[in-house]
Length: 500
Image (cartoon, rainbow, N blue to C red):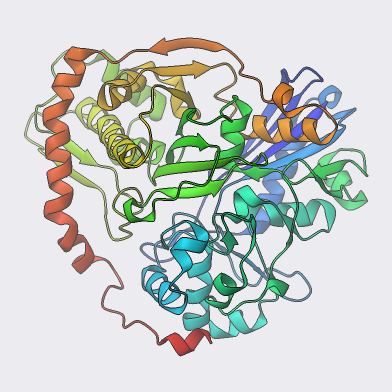
């Protein structure tokens, strides 16, 4: 048996697979995030540990017995700041936090080669600008920071007592040299840090430490189980369903939305806000287009309209007898947006309300808005790469065929739904544990077969085209207003010397 643990934003998922890679048990413990100020997004790492213990202990005893190795996956970019005694200094700043927009400009000014070295445009959600922001706005915290860990790597510290990371997650910090897959001293210096503040790097399937007696007792497992390097949620989600070879593509419908293409070499395109990261397999890389609010957009409509939950809202959308209003459009930028806009000031918009608008109409417009955001991302990915032929769909949102129809029509690409896709990155983390125990990577990450395929419908594509045109013009028309009205936009940028 092999255990995969995925530290997500909305919950911690634990998955156990057998020697053949089949899922035998899984469990989920929920998490919430805090927003102490507009545009901020934080979590207390202590909650991650409690949720991890709850998720693993919820697994049947029979599944927890005989675990041979553990793999970790996790949300990217989060900054966990530790003092010299490994005490957490402040709540973790998450991937969807927008406070560090000015810090991005400062970071790139300090190291003009940052985009070449990291392969990425500096964005507020990435880790490095968060440290620049901390140095300028919380200098006492920055002065006490001895180590910076990513979320899943902090969880590794709790499990094993080891400071370690691996290239797929580390490449989302802006501190990793994308080509060499090693820490870059110039990029670290641009944040006022050195390699001493970084965990050691191991490969994703290499052993990074062993489960301590204390952690084993908390999780109901045996002490001494090896814990492998693991990977970012996106890399593990892709590997778990066999998206590892050049040109294979994945669409992840989670709290955020990710459209991802595997590459056999680095293909950065920071000018279009396309992310270039390492895969969790050697000599493999990823290109990503990210929309920050995916299922979160539907959740917002649930809260605003009083629907029971997301599933019941989608059921209302499917059951609606009247045609969708022709000009009702939602911009799903609840936490700003990445690809292709790189705009932390962007916010959600509902356009085209009238006296007849229903809750189902709003739900449908939210689903469409996320689909249009993915279409923008696909355009960015294909601008410098080959055409994406089809996409494998994973994540909680993959349970909705109605949403799949809209996305397939907006992208004008077929969507394939692999077995196990709803389990997500935890499946890839368990696969890395298998590789660490000696299973060949090609066997551990073989394609799992497809339950169904949704082809784009020409009539629906034509219907969506007019609303996508409104969608795109709305952002262009409102972009300047977003920037002017973002809370904190009037705050003067701190001088570069603040992070020296």
